[in-house]
Image 1 (cartoon, one colour):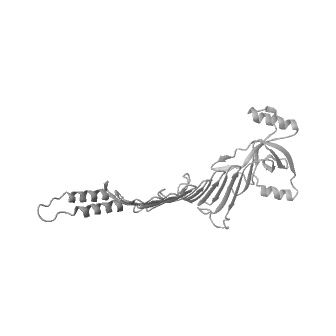
Image 2: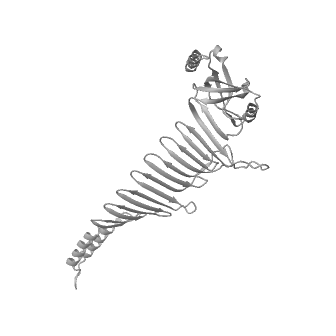
Image 3: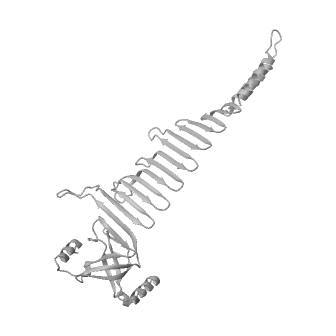
Length: 324
């Protein structure tokens, strides 16, 4: 099949004539053959206004019209070489929209869409050129942009991807897969919505190394060591700050408007405006000291001086003030 570059040379040398006619797009599905997309569409030539009305009626009903089928032209190009790589600018017209089709010297294989009224999607790709005599690299460098009314996709080779729509912005740094049929693995991700920003970093086995999430209500941070299984996490909101360290034992620090708390497994120290609370394994230090003093005060000495009950009672009162 002739390349448009060769066709242009023929036009320049006045060997061919170019005719342009209006048409309506009846099929804009891009077929994939042997792994390569074929950038071509099917159109029907518009001769009169009545043709347009009939074609629109057929498209709406889904029933084919034999007379209109005679006006159908397949394999109308959207790029110079329809089945090579995606490099270049490709504009796919919307099904049912008007286009202008240019055909060179009345040869159907030389037909291409030259003007558009409505666009379904746009693909633009720029490859790093391969120098003459060099082999095509296994990991080619390129920038690719795919644009629809509802979505923008950006690729920088096989290492970076960005998706943007009306609800989300997602940016990924990728680790190319050894198998071309498998999706690349995400090493890091930044995701933003109206109310949330999230940052994720993970290894090639999808184990999380760090995770940050920011919302209107709070900030959460998680950092993990994949070798030692240790992790640290921080939670912050207007009323609370919690720091947690986890390895063989769990250590947590929590601060809010009324408390300062440190916990190591079942052991816990809490400082409040009411005093200090110390506990471990369900046992409370204040209650335990009170019991000790009560038992001492029960001691009866037959000879000599017994416990100073008044002093012990004062000590018990002081403990109750200090400990919660």
